[in-house]
Length: 632
Image (cartoon, rainbow, N blue to C red):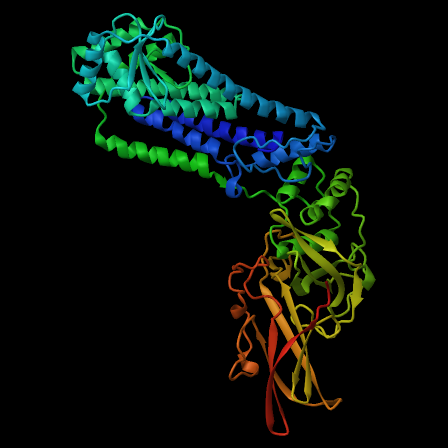
């Protein structure tokens, strides 16, 4: 947790889990054993230690949207040093991670106060324990008879005796102190064997360490009263479970006597120090424990399976949650919640960033563009969206003489998407504009195109598109959506074989399938371009074009040339021809998987190209190497 908003996300998530567990415990109060009632708190402990939003999952759908809307509304008016108003709130760790920078806003101060409160609460617990240890150090050794009774009880039930036993003046009841070097502390008055049994069972089952863990978890959410209540309940459940274990070892009249002992402690004050156990835990809690003793029963083994199933369901609900599928914002969204949805739908793939960028410009939608814009552009886009203003960018199809509202639709491809040394990608984004049947300027459905060099860059977990130049018209010699275009830049490869120079032009196109089937009441169904952004899209279509020229003695010669792209370190193929070109499936297009962040394994420019040609019945082979790249 690095700012007050990540703490709020964490503590709200934990509170939801706590409320679910409290409700479940209420429903199963008389139906499941004290072991289940106490053990189920481990789910809450795990929830506190797991960062909220892990793997994109939330406990309450809409919580992240509401928090983002509140954060942007508050932080956009501040200049916080710890919070990015337009970034997505993330919990990187369940503990406060303090950056020691001067606070610039009230939210910065609040986070520092939270972190200081966590540290001071932890210090208070430690000093309380240290003060008790100092008091225990002044205790006196018990009489031989008392020692003999302690060893007798331990021997009778197969329990271990702590290394040190002392009698402490002023102690109201027996307790065990210290998880590392436990000390059994006894009051000056006589102690019943059943009280000794209770404390020795605490020691056997590690309840001291559980108490220390609860104190630490209290510190992490010291300002959340619901969680303090839960850990109070957990300590009471620990005592109830210890009662159950005692009663399981007693018979008949001894059980009634154990209840009488508890009743005698009903007026004791509950002030247990950290790192200790005490049979007395306050009058109200003891009365509840006496009621449990009155209805004591041994639970059959079959109940254990049912308890485990209930706990497993609660664990999945409280720990796994649901996938946070945030609804896309509307095209002309301007409300706080809608803009929060836009920020939570930032593009997670390069293909998704390109698709969202194109559709944002065509729809003139600041909300859409927020999903694919670089972080430095977000403040201006948020301001424009809130004010209902248009984008301060030219309409991409304007170079074709088309304006917004002309009825034109456009699909996109990206040429030669190349990875740079800094992990960004550059390529040429090309739009095919299809004029719809009802437009006044309809021209036989002939596609026209515009292009723009772009950079696709990673920003944290998201991808953004940065334009490098303005949109320009492209002379369409073919359908750009399915073929490469000789008028657009290509990658050049050169090979020299004896007296021949071979120059190979290589182009490859990546795109996604943007067609959707639309039903029509009067004209039947038809396929149309999907105008809704797909921020998590993967490339689904891959095309390439390879062409070449040859020179011999400075003159261009006409040759029949075969080409085969090679990967890094791949040997020259023994036999190949036009039919040996890899299919789209072999380029990793199957389900869009693979390690390549663009969505597939091998959609990239080849390391080199194998060439084979014939000249005057003589066959030649060679390897063409890259000569130049269109964009740096």
